[in-house]
Image (tube, rainbow, N blue to C red; front, side, top):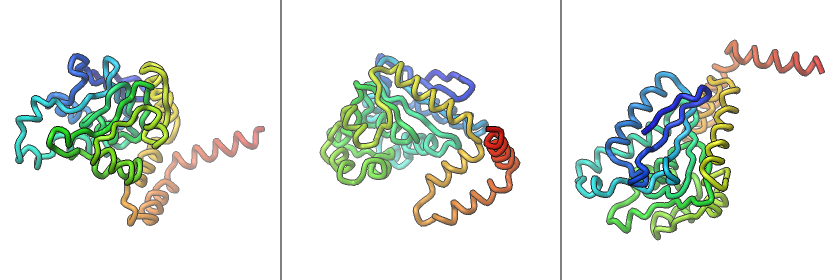
Length: 243
């Protein structure tokens, strides 16, 4: 995996194009290293795949050798949960195939941008396993239970227009470069916002339903006392008065 600090964000590129960026143990290890960096120094993360594919799935040769203890260890699950829990937003650029574990990595992002070649879904049952790295709970929240059921139980693969209609992606472009440009534009927009408020918004967004509205009020109470809130609101009022 290639990592580039682009100032407003970190760009991480899955870089096994000869294997369609299949998710192997080396990539999982690299994701944990990346997460440690972004947990220590929060930045927006943009994830993409090299060679016209996001990630065509898990490395089947490695997956075939895993046994019950490996399943219970949650090798991919824990890495994707850590991606999802990063303090700042995660944006996935989905070009070409995003299948199986690749789809589950995409579901762990906060924002997804796609291309016309996108094919996304979970064909795991065809390989004798389930989608156990996040799809069974995240996908239902993202697209609703009826469509999630068809994807998970019948192996339906969504094309780009279907993914857009379902809200699984929020932007659709002709190619990967245009999609990456949009993702980086979003990251640039995030960088102009108060990072403390952005991190609080992500925590509240991820909070369970029963935690609301108390979690919102607790986070807002902290922000109401922040110097950055005072500075930004004062500047807003001064600009308004100057017009």
